Length: 538
Image (cartoon, helix red, strand yellow):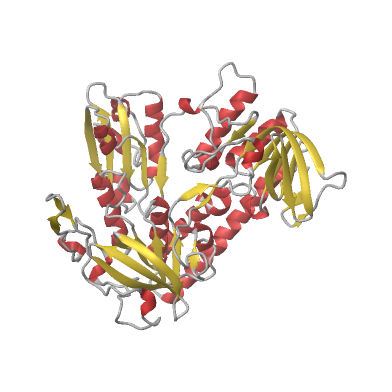
């Protein structure tokens, strides 16, 4: 049963108050799977979703699936040469956005009807907030609906984290990933604030479409959690696509540019080149007081304390001088100011649990220090009979983890003798869909060393894999960490075509405690990327 449809919103004809077995706040992967399971078991379920544009959750509407649709279209544009002229770029981008909208609309509709067409499920479109331990009010377009439920499940996901930069919320042309994936016109220039994996996916995608992309990173190290050799390989591939990086870059202010674009005032520590006055001290559009590096080949576009000659960067030396107690101390590094002008800005500085407006305190639900809903290993909150699933509980922000959270919760509701817990979860893999996908699972070398483990490193260049040569995709490397005495697979990092498929084989072997020799000796079909595991683990 449905209170709303994708095209219209109405409240029930009978009463604005509903009593139900279960209330699920949010239409994400974990919540919608749980709703269907509860309904099949004969339970009455209400699903509250704040927006009709989000039926099905983040992944299918504004996350993994629309972004992958655009990434595939961008790769096709690069292969076909459609990114070579302004006219063909625009046409390729327009077709990609059209296809992305078709896919998301189709999936949204299917997800909606998968729940709303069931007699035991009522879908209500509106923002929910707690009014008591087991009571919620949902603000719909036609008035509030009160819901009382025996069990409540919070599945509201996460929302982009917006840094406190003057002008970032008010300047046209500044987007989160949601807005950037729904543009009608392709930006010729794009600045990305943040060089995490979300930002890098968009950098790779838009570079393939033909956009001039500059990535601003706040600190000096690229992908600091990854092994240095892997990070260097990822950076080299992005730079080969034309992506430019500016390290130690602190965005001070954002404002409209005179040409209708966006102007960023950026301070770069450790750089001596460039003017030091603020962007707003020079009239917008004047050329020489600041360096416009967006999409240009200026030598200042790539800088790092560990720059090599090919980086074309000039770095200042950190000077020392005695302190009051006679000990040497470091002076503040030099700082250069730049005024970047661009057509669009992507803010890719992470995502934060979406708890705003839920009034969790009314139900006795507490938050962690990082703002996530506090849960135990069974995903129970601090309030009885209230659980939290997915990104909102502070776990890994992956759709498949939200599905895993459903399994944790369902194991408590289906009469299992021993519920499945978060601690039972093994080896969470991840993939980043760059032009050459990067996937990993388990420990990398940096983490294995920090843990004091005795290990050996296995390496294989992707160029040595026959299928990669056949696919004309020989770029990248494969790396694995194996415990020396036991042969236990500690982790793997695959920067390779089809790595997002192959990594699941490694995860399965790790889950089954199979030694590295299992993958070394496994019979794979040929030619495949997966058969590279024979050589990687040799």
